[in-house]
Length: 111
Length: 120
Image (cartoon, rainbow over all chains, first blue to last red; front, side, top):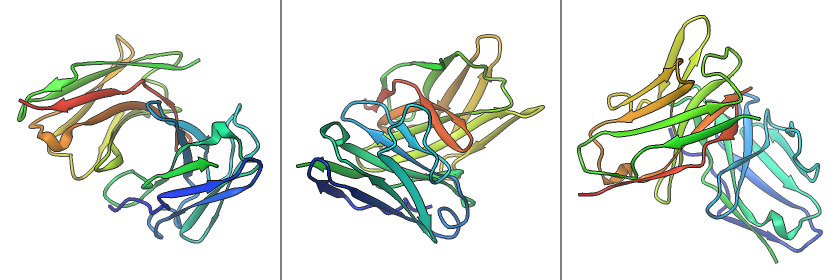
């Protein structure tokens, strides 16, 4: 099972919006609405930001939103803030040899 | 509030068994509305799902196919915890290991992480 594909890095200025893509296949992203997104600051534990493609857990800022089209899911951060600088990972349920697969990770830099 | 507290050695010799424990508070390992997973993270392999244990009228386990000959995840209902055992480890198993609660197909609570180094 290959990892989901994400861009290595995305950057933006404070206040701007950025979008991170997460590309898989019909066996994972395209086949299930079980895509989630995680934020990880250096040396910290991953934090759930989006579940079920577009649902925000309680306490997560509404500046974070998720969507999906075909085999590609996306995370959009609007009104970018310095504290958003972190690594972001997507994850999807999969019907292949592992129950869940993760993305390769994207480093978000706030310029 | 759910809290997952990991424990276990950080250094394991090659070909020995890596054993980690995840103590659960604020929820039950026997709940029928969540599942209890192990995930690892390394710079070479990124985040990798290892396996899960969960209770749905009886206990179930599911493991990553690449590891199923070497991995065991087991619940301990008397102590409300779960354990990971990974045998015959090699340096490629060096990683930060996390336990995580899976609820509605997402990992909403994570342990603090344990850096396990495989070295002689």
